[in-house]
Image 1 (tube, helix red, strand yellow):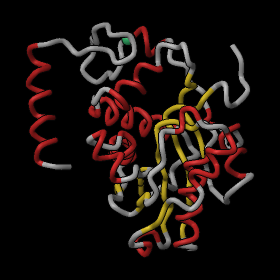
Image 2 (image 1 turned 60 degrees about the vertical axis):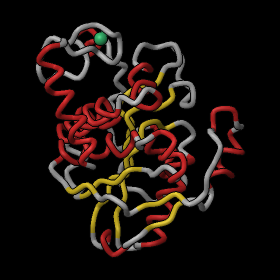
Image 3 (image 1 turned 30 degrees about the vertical axis):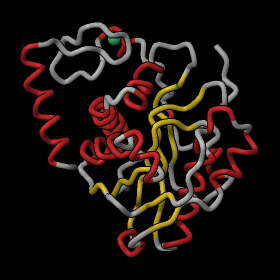
Length: 243
Ligand SMILES: [Zn+2]
C-alpha cells in the first residue's frame, strides 16, 4: 500500500466523522460501524451459499479444467440487480476502499465455512500494468487484501503478473475470451508458493477463463502448491440460472 493511499484512507476515516457513510449498493445511509452495506441491502443480498458447498456450480466448472481444491463465488451478479452498483463502484468509479471492505466480507464468509480452513495465503488476479495505470489501481488487489485480513493469512503481492494487454472483454464472444487469456499470466518467485495453499481472488467469475488461465500459470510454475479460487460475484446468466 502506498503512502498516498494511506493518506487517502486516513482522510476518508476523518471524513466519516462528519459525513454519514453511504451504502455502495443503494446509496442509502449505513447505520452500523462495521457494516459495508445498509441493513436492507444485506438482507436482500443475492447470496449463492456456494462457500458452504464443496460441490457447487463454480467449483464444477473449474474442476473440469484445472486441479483446484475449492472454488466459490459469494454473490450472484444480476445485470439489473442493485448489487451490481457495488462492483461498478469499485471497478469504474475509484471507490477502491469499498473493494477492501467487500474483501473483508468475503473473508469473513469463508472463515465461517468449514471448507476453507486450509488456505494459508491469498493473491489477486493481476491487471496488465498499462490497465492498472489507466485505472490507478487493481480492484481485485484490494478485494484480496481484505480477504487475507479477514482470514488472518498472508497477502502475496507481486507474485503474479499479466504480460499481455487485452482490450476490455465486454463485447467479445465466449471463444474469444478463452483465446484472449491463454498464456497471458506468469509467476514470479514461484518458490514463495511451495508447499502452500493459495487462494486466488478476483471480482467476477463470468466464463472463468481469466481465473483458470491464471490458475494454470500458478500450477505450472509451482507443482507443490494447492490452489483454490474465490470471487465476489458470479454471473447468474452465465450459470444458466434464471429468476
Ligand atoms: Zn443499501
